Image (cartoon, rainbow, N blue to C red; front, side, top):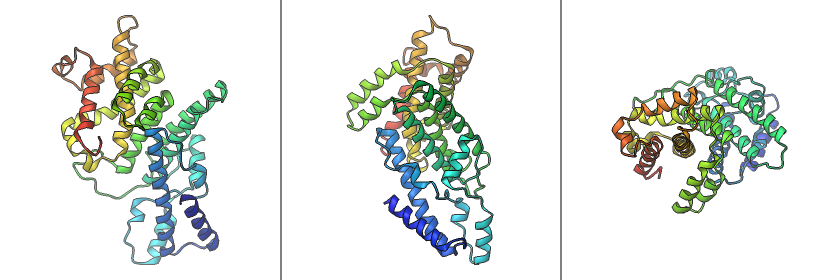
Length: 337
């Protein structure tokens, strides 16, 4: 469907030559394009959760421009000339150009939707690297560095993405655009996957067997390695946990289905598992291998989210407290569960 639709879109664009589209032509083109990218993101989430082979290659979109801003897409412009000026003045790079710029360390200017598309592409790049055992270690290390740099550049892109005029409700969990809020969840998960990947757990999820999933989650503790790069991942895990903690765990758990996108529980699954297992490892090794300064800072931040009674309920195990709160939050909402 996507390949056929992309081909039809490409034919329409080539048929126009250098002529700018009319508003009606642009609506048809942009609507098709946004649908293709939405499907791309949807399959990306399936790949992330169940380790499915990506159904759509990023090469499918090379020459297609990223989605425009929501402001332009939803604009109610009655005059053709007024719309044409808004269309021409908005910077919208092609997918291939924006993707290449990330790896060159140049932050592309794109829409909030475009940011979400690009982090999906980077996530799939990380997965491809992790699933290619035949690649030499030196090549893996070099490309890992490039991916890490591209992720940092993507994060900088959020400071310059195309301005979106919208009203954010007071009850919303984010201050800015919801698509950027959702993209940040994927960003945290992608950075975590670059460091540690729970393949057996993802594959166990396909069969919906709680016992098998739990067994693989327990065994995954061996995958967690204390390091400087892991500590940076734990900081991102903390940020993910901090958002509902500061807003109110029970309130978020009971209302999240109304204003949180599916990215958050799906990406949160990885992040909270990494956080719980890292805390467990720290508690097991603390006497023999004291925490570094950076590790202690993160530990103190996490503990500050709990009162002493909450942690005492689990034998002073912060790892158990985090796991229980996270599990309870997911269990509270039938949509997330």
